[in-house]
Amino acid sequence: MQIYVCVKHVPDTAAKITVKAPNQIEEAITFIMNPYDENAIEEAVRIKKRRGDAEVIAVTLGKPAAENTLRSALAMGADRGILILTEDPPDSLVTARALTVAIEQDGTPDIIFTGKESIDNAGFQTMYRLAAALDMTVVSNVAAFALEGKRVVVECQMEGGARGVIELSLPCVIGAGKGLNKPSYPTLPAIMQARRKEVKRIALDSLRIEKPSARADILELKPAVEARRAQQLKGSAEEVVRQLIRILREEARVIE
Amino acid sequence: MEKVGILIEVKADQIKKANYGVITAARGRDRQLYAFLLDGGRADHKLTLGRYGIHKIIEIAGQEGPLEWNPATWAQAVIEAMEYFGIRTLLGLTSSQGKDLLPRIAARLDAPLVMDCIHLNLAEHTVRKPQYSGKTIATLKVQGGHCIYGVRPNAIAAQPAPCEAETVIYRTAPAPAGLTVKAIKQAMSAGVDLSEAEIIIAGGRGMENGENFKILFECAALMGAAVGASRAAVDADWVPYAMQVGQTGVTVSPKVYIACGISGSVQHFAGMKTAGLIVAINQDLTAAIIGKCDYAIVADLFEIVPRLTRKLQALDGRI
Ligand SMILES: Cc1cc2nc3c(=O)[nH]c(=O)nc-3n(C[C@H](O)[C@H](O)[C@H](O)COP(=O)(O)OP(=O)(O)OC[C@H]3O[C@@H](n4cnc5c(N)ncnc54)[C@H](O)[C@@H]3O)c2cc1C
Ligand SMILES: Nc1ncnc2c1ncn2[C@@H]1O[C@H](COP(=O)(O)O)[C@@H](O)[C@H]1O
Image (cartoon, rainbow over all chains, first blue to last red; front, top):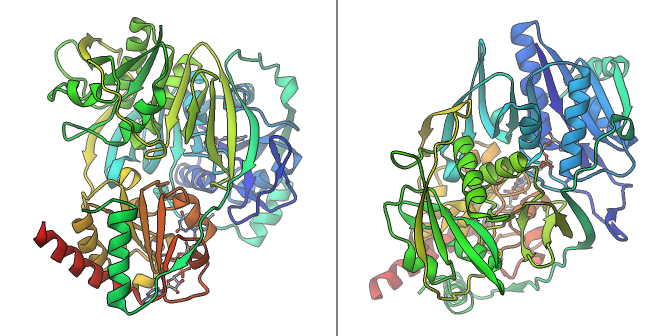
């Protein structure tokens, strides 16, 4: 069985983001694998360990530096990688088309794992687009996953901590949530080994994706203004609580 | 006349308040607003939805009765209703349900979709949304035969604009989806939902253990607040992951966020920085959150929170 895992190279959450005009960020910062994609890789590698007959292929679309994230995926246990190269990362519609075509050209997916969202542009949609294009079933924000023969049973996070238990048929697309598993971090030998694993490089243009008429373009990126001016509430605990109640009631108007 | 569809969320037969902000954002001149409801039509929402400017309420149902929850069939049913009524623009919430339905619909229609919008200009097809965990705000322009938007709950203030709403029942029989909902396991603490709460009181490592979260739940119950947590508290297994606020947890936008014993890491801020008012209770004056909030209480949370609870109880008695 073939399991494809989409992994994205994204800025570290702690990194300072500086906007370069008009719609790009300064990229001389630390990049990491999108956190949920780590859960996606982990789950795929676990299936491989249990079944023995599975091949895990990590796929990414990005600039050449995205190879680092691909290598991390290989160090976590993926067998090989596919790197779709572009200098100008496209919107979700084209990204999903490119991932679809690259996967279709490479093999026959039984399961495609993605993260539940990318933390840089928070699209919340790539897995659904992959599923629609490949005519597969899809569930995202998955917190538990079990493969029983040709049947997949998952639990997805719903409102207020509730969980939906969903059964779906293979092939399917699964958007991994944080609670799915605890990714194990690669050992040094695994990291060394990952350097020798095969990575197929494809130029985005060579995939000949027909430009969809539907699109979402970033016109402008602006730093978010942090307009809070902290004010300290002073006095005894009793006085402080009294001030807080007044703020909740008169300023925020959330209590009566 | 342009028709705009709004996917309305209902909980316990009540329209969730956060929907009214979405309706407000959808309004415009020469625009007719269609509310899509799939709740089974147990309650009549004509008055409530009409108050915010909905013209038509479309109750989507199966041939025999309500459509049981199944994200794939629900999405298909909404697509069919959009087609039937000639609707090309759809709005909804970036809530748990919205995150499951809007992208399914967009993917099937091959339509552009922007989730987590905090500002919309439907006439120009432009929206604004936070990116890079809220460190930047992006302006996007969408183009396509259909356009779908997810609005961040509470990000747009609701304003009434009364009109006369009319209810239409739309019956459909969506094809089997290859996906079966076997069960829905309810959470143990069925309190106020985090992503739509008006007030959130959250605890971090400063809570010391899971047992102590009780003081937050007691306080929250009096304010109608939801209880959240930092990742430190979740990783220590004090509270379930569903309560985690932040980059890798829930994104919230309440009117008031009260952080107790939370240091204010960038990852935590990523999930709550759009709160209306941030109050920090932290005994360390140098904690990052002290400089990044609206009101700082530099004190032991165990001194403050129980007192706040007692004061709220007293107030409650007086009303
Ligand atoms: C990729 C990634 C993703 C992450 N995602 C998230 C996320 O989604 N959400 C999240 O929260 N974190 C996230 N983190 C973790 C984040 O970096 C911090 O480690 C975490 O937020 C710290 O939690 P805390 O503030 O509760 O703990 P601490 O940083 O340890 O702060 C505890 C605070 O409590 C105060 N305190 C202690 N006792 C008391 C008392 N009695 N009264 C008052 N104050 C007291 C202390 O002064 C201190 O400031 C993520 C990290 C990474 C790397
Ligand atoms: N450029 C990309 N390369 C590989 N995978 C991606 C890319 N963009 C998105 N994905 C996958 O799709 C998931 C959801 O992303 P998004 O739809 O942007 O929130 C991510 O967690 C990844 O698994």
